[in-house]
Image 1: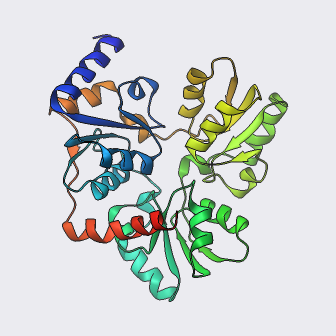
Image 2: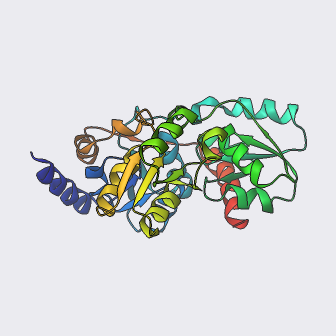
Image 3: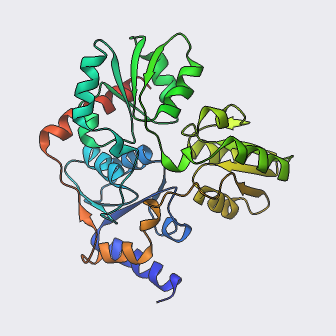
Length: 304
């Protein structure tokens, strides 16, 4: 099959089987084109929960599929590529959280949405990269333990010096690979370009940016901006997607190494095999984990 033929067959199958396809923004362009919803991980899960479809197919990584299951416990949730994990989510376990609570008694445990269901179940509140500052600001407790991304946690800490925010070692390997030298090199090559970066980047990178925001915020900023050149400091697929949505503007990747290998495990044949029942994996979570993991998510929504 050609790309177009395979896309048409996937669209036919999802309609026939009543499947809602979710695709994270870091997926390939041809995968995005067959999805019902495209966006950041938590936004996708909320969209799926509102859909009538009884089956959700996540084109992303495992923690995203788990979050979708938490918000839609009565639906079947499929992960297109069972091997697609998240190195950052795997850096902390539920046992680690329990040990950290003993080390930092009285602290509010704030978990990035990029965590496993079992870690969420041990947390007080979840945050996304877009909502982290707002949620931390509204949290009554000034003592906050932020897990598992120290770069995002440090970014929040810089915005809220009145809060006592403790971070732990870890972070996204792809975003951590972006260096200050990358910034100097690309600014020299493209002196008129605006630098847009994700808060998962190191402080040495974010402090030099013209704009810091989530994947969705970076995309919206570039699309609405009157500028014509941008250096994109996040997963390199976003540079490609912006080239499709804004072909009259120029986009340059900040670092060629900022590619999530787990995200790239999903392609059109992977999605097709999942729809035909010859691939993918259904996400099964214990009822108590779903119930406890839902609480910090609900707290995030309560705080805005």
